Amino acid sequence: MKKKIYLSTIAVLLAGMTLTSCDDFLEAENRTAGGQTADDYFGQDASTYLVATYNSLKSIVYNPALYCQGTDLYIMTRGKAAGEFNEYTMTDENSTVTNYYSNVYKTINYANGVISYGAEGTTVTDEARFLRAYGYYLLTQQFGAVPYITRYINDPETNYPRTPLTEIYPALIAELTDLYNNSSLAAQDHTGRASKQAVAALLAKVYLAAGWDLDTPANDIAKGTYSVNSTANFTEAAAWAEKAINGIQLTMSFADKWSPSNEGNAEEIFSVQYDRAGYPGDASDAGHSMQNNFGGYYGACTTTGEKNVSSEDAQSQKSMYLFEKGDKRYDATYMTTMWNGTMESATKAKWGSEGYYAYYNVDDPGKNLIIAHRYFPFYVTEAEAEAEFAANKKLYANPTVDGSLKYITQVTADILTLPNVIHYTFKADGSVDKKTTQAIATYNVQTSNGVCVKKFDDPESAQLTGSNCFRDIVLFHVSDMYLIAAEAYLMAGQTAQALAKVNAVRQRAGLAALSSFDDYIQNHVNYGTTSSFTFNNLDVILDERARELYAEGHRWMDLRRTKQLVRYNVEFNEYVTTPAKMMDVAGTAYKLYRPIPANEISANTGISNADQNPGYGAPVSTTDAE
Image (cartoon, helix red, strand yellow):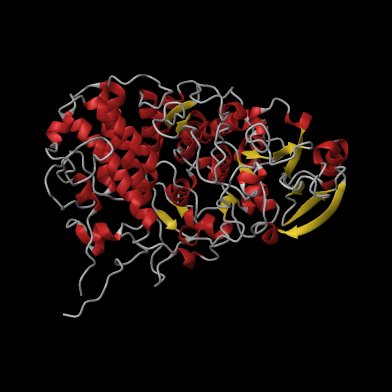
């Protein structure tokens, strides 16, 4: 019996390398005649290579399969398969997991190089220390114990054992605390650089994770119950979240906070930067695809003028009920009105000024444009929707009825009454043509099925079927810290302080303050999407995080951290019907972390099959007769 032959992720990334440029920094092959040693490479100004460390975050921070799927908030639509992450069928050879593991270690390796060859105590090395700590925070949340390496390795060492969380968390806390107290980092920064505010935010997250992972053992994994053995880490998490908040009040509207014209605002703590104007190549075919996820499908953008959306990670049924009436975050999170071209257009909609992006680029799109799709949340009645139609017939005029404008999308409107959807089509004069009731399962496989997320929209995007978003990807922001503080206070037994933080977030959203956690009404429970969900105070905070941070990439880590991963999936993930679906084949262990990649177990001499995370068993291997 022989293992497959792999190159260890860590061995490849951290072994001695010859270097030629930032782009091929991690290539083990010398591609120039003379080559450069690591000493040569880093012996220059280390700040040059800090840029590469920041840029390496771009391969990490947007990963909806890892960050969003397999939770309560998202589903695949239009016939797309659920996939390994939603169904918890991934193995240790899953390419997304393997690439993520490798890419995070790339960031760590860049940072270790900068720290090793830069001048100690400079801002350059302090920023690299922060980025390294952030990489290890991500690894611990996805994989648990991982090899913890703080030096740049320029030898062919392949022995990197997993370091227990009992060692990693204290090490991260010590380093970050020193960075906050003794470094030359700026107090705040809104341009994508590490700052003391970002250090405080990361410390809050690390302390919170340590409180759950080290001090709060599960009693019943399927039920999400636990016992708190110590509140010390939770108390520290709350204190550091308060430092990150730094007295900032939530006075900016939620819509302004996420407006594409307001990047780098006062609530942003740390983000990964994208710049269309400064992109060195063809910016019309670059950027990321965050705006192209989290929604249905609205036809080919090159002919309809609508944004290209993937039909992946659209609203789950729970998400459809999540926002109550009056919550301003609903319209700020989702695109509820999509525009067409003009009634006089002879060809496809003019990109940017007509179609989807007219919402941003035209002062009053309803003055000259007609609607393509209109989406109403579940609390809007049929009578209210039909009153809007009658009062705005010119907006619903449907030119596709007589075929005069074949490139303009058929006008539709939907009310998410649930478990059915009321679907409307319109006549040429804007009056209602047909009104049908569809089961949610039927609705989710049709074209233009439901709202898409608009928080990440880039109105300057080219008319591409692929990605072309240059919005900065925000990793830490102030309202997240309010809710980190709320969770930490709750777990530390300080219920009043926890409720105050939740209320601050709710009131900015236009909702009434809760006099107690018991006052909160969970719409998705009351409207029958689940029958056996036992409600508690932690669920209030998790619901608030679901609304405030929707589609930002926190959900899987939130549920894993709080020990609600199995409970929430069984109740709200339509692809997971029983706790056994989240266990190994033998039904003996839950998949509460991602698998350590097979290549790591095969080639890293410090890790064996016995070190694999529970739920995954031994790596897949070939059989050779000897």
